[in-house]
Image (cartoon, rainbow, N blue to C red; front, side):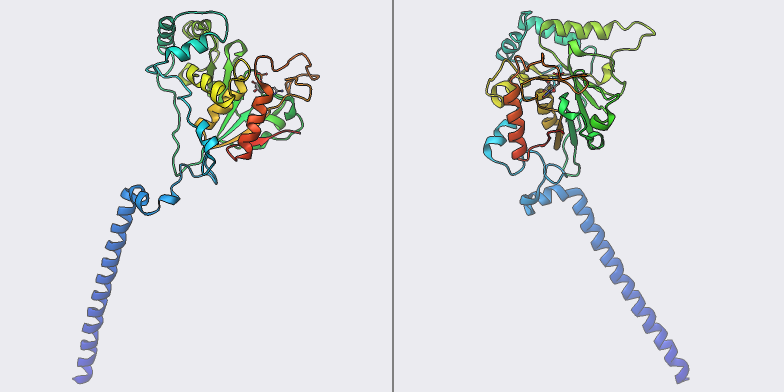
Length: 327
Ligand code: C5P
């Protein structure tokens, strides 16, 4: 009997032990799930108080303007780079913009023309916001001849956004300049057929440019391919152009080059910016990578080419961007 009793007592205590073990595991599981739930829902708020020094604006090794000197921090505060329908351009900014190229016009004309443009393109430019969990990288590709034999193509294509400028093209130069283009920034005289998936970023310098946009986008002959995808089109803000010229370039030259403004735009839409294809030759010629021979006739003109180059070097020395000077 005893012998039979022992195993019974043993079984009861074993099952009791098992039940309490299960309870402990269940409690631990509930505790674990509650803690994870709190972390998921309140993680950011909790970290704000617990670990302020570890907050990041992006997930790159280093985010733009992070831990830098005050001088560089100041230039990071610019007006919104891309226009939206509701953006209220000040008279001061308008007057600066109006004088860039001949054409004149009043601010009310300007507002009417912009209203027409926004009847054809999206109201708010589709931009991806920065987030602590993501690293948005940009390649800005200028048109300098220093790209030839550089073999930068794969590095350029590796970035999330590849921004090309004016007449910059890939065909025949893929090894040096890459072949992806996510954004193509241009002054309108240089506009040519873009891929349907490329975002056109339009730089306007005069009233006629606004009329050009409306004309090109509203009269699309059937059967003819449109110049670019209007649903992806964006227009640069004149206030942003003025800020780049006055604050970044200290009013040197007439106004910044399209390439330099594209670079400033990249600093706004990306967390890490890689810059390629900038730099005149030693005589100050702005020849292009597709020119058969260096073009000695293109000087940097009204644009302060040397100042822009030095500014890019300075931004690189502060690790705001990475500058690839070519071959
Ligand atoms: O010549 P283009 O203006 O189309 O070139 C695009 C941009 O590339 C320029 O606005 C300028 O910022 C940059 N560039 C340069 N050095 C060159 C050619 C172009 O820095 N030799």
